[in-house]
Length: 193
Image (cartoon, rainbow, N blue to C red):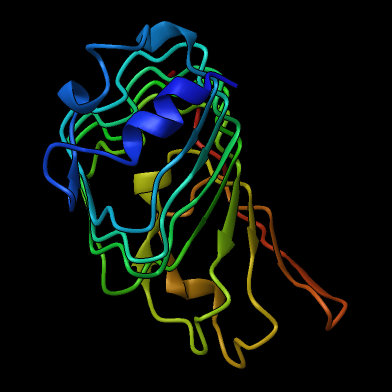
């Protein structure tokens, strides 16, 4: 852990928004492997942590509102992320080319996600719907590239496989604590990647 960046993040230039210049003067960006963003931060600016190629773990604050364009672009060691339900926008290429990213926890409703926010995240196969979701609605899975497994919260009482639009690679939907697992049979297109 490079603790210098964690300390720097406690004193950003704008106490509510985090940008690359808030820490890059004193810290070698490529040396950072763990980031814990302080609770006062509500916005992560464009390219704030882009190309932090040693970054493997990040904790988002509970009241985070937006993740800017390219904020974590090419952070190739991040394996999973949990987006707080407070987030309302995820920008272009925000997690683009995070090639080790395999799992995301998110509430996909009431949020605007750029179509290319997870561009070239070809390892991203697991989507966990955040526990605050009570009822599933339709949403477009193509944003998440090749999701094969969706985990719904046990509080989600109703859903239909057709709620998952453009779920070309979806194979399983599971609901923990209920012992329910649903297999989805779809024709998988020829791989174009």
